[in-house]
Length: 284
Image (cartoon, rainbow, N blue to C red):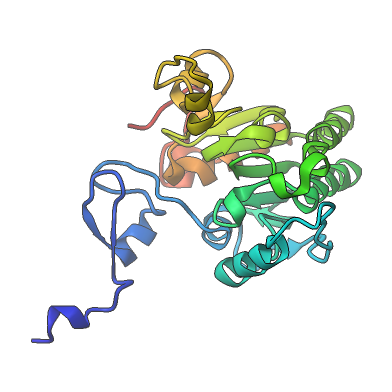
């Protein structure tokens, strides 16, 4: 028998919630949702793309936009380069066109591991171009949001991405093009205050943290706040979120919504080989 310390380190992964040791292949089959406690582990952009689009269908858009450093912020460019090497991305959001069960759509996926998913000029510009291009092409849009907020290294340039992306979202509405926003853990700051809450349908994964100011910022202010206020469940109960959907049901839920938007009958439960998530349904 081989020594235990010879087991490859990526063969098992610990659930950060219940600390159960999980077999990596089984976890991938569960779409990185802990089968014991239901905790939704953080996904990379590439994992999210894999479970949210048809294989080989994704075509990236605007992946050549230059970095903006208006303040010559110390170590900023080096920090971006380190993030690029670590994540195999060149910014905190990936945008482009794909298909989902054969339905063409524009897609945006944010990555929290790239400088906290923060929104600088490139992120805001990619989201804006995604929304405006889809309005012109009459393509429905799905954006998976995850962010710590505005990118402080870009100062006011970063903050201006909030009104810019919001204006782009309004063009979708004027063009009668559907927009589905998916809130993942966590979604804070300028992203929460702009395009993430402007979708026609706003979906959240269970227990996703969402709000304008993160918990550390709230703590500094000295304000008292219920611990559950910035949870997806609290926001759903108070009408800010339309659906809370388990990740394992996310793909077929989005597909059903896209079908309804296009006047197509969604597949039946038997055709989907599983029950589609219903409005307001929360999978425990």
